[in-house]
Length: 344
Image 1 (cartoon, rainbow, N blue to C red):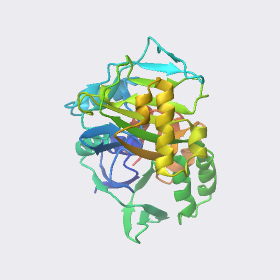
Image 2 (cartoon, rainbow, N blue to C red):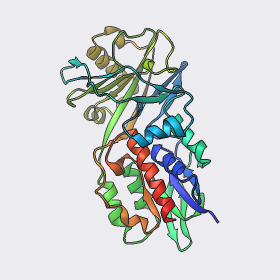
Image 3 (tube, one colour):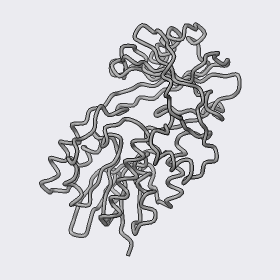
Image 4 (tube, helix red, strand yellow):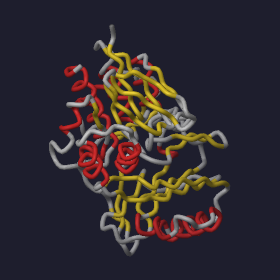
């Protein structure tokens, strides 16, 4: 009989774990609260454009992850962003970036293709629009209940991959009463996050600049990142520009509840000032996203989650590794999936 594994969250870590379990004796079921996949590596479409509004790309910093996307998964539509990333300081002074920049990958259809291809390769069942509310471990295994009152189980193991505050809340709301629950929850809840408000600004002209992205390297500007989606093949029509502008965490917290019109007006004005181009104050259309849990500031202490494995409970994500990068979440998901396979 196959072992039943529940994965909460269809982000990069959760879908990578499912992929790592594909040849094991485990049957994996993923529960995803939204209608999409790949978590904060998110893609939208509007007016014929494809754009990322969370994680911008996947880097080739990790050899294993690089092998995964270029050799193991289908590579059709995989594109490299050739233009470099430059920097700017608190005064808005723009400078050329480092010479040792790594390869940056995305897909013509958007970065969510990463998780979609992992799911397809794993043959995993995904329950979308299903928000897990409680966990309970009985003598027969784990049982999961969602916010609509539906119950799922029995599962031989559970993997939690939401951001640390949400994973901690799940443990706090669970009916699992073992003494290990409280210290695990406290450890996970201690991981702090940066909040980021993102604005998308579309223009019917193309910018004539030599870079793909700009990053504030001293964390003293109200803008944190500007990315040009037109530098990604298949994302934006020729002769147009689409800018992803991610505001700095302090600014994002202060303006989190601003009205969208006011928010986007300010983002457009800040972008125009940074790029010294008054045309950017008047985008043809806009979009926005609030990421309350955008980037973990650090990870959990080494071995602090080990007690959970004795209960067939696991955790994965960039907050586990303390490295707020998409490739880190994928790698951690692969490693955790392999760990589950070995221990079942």
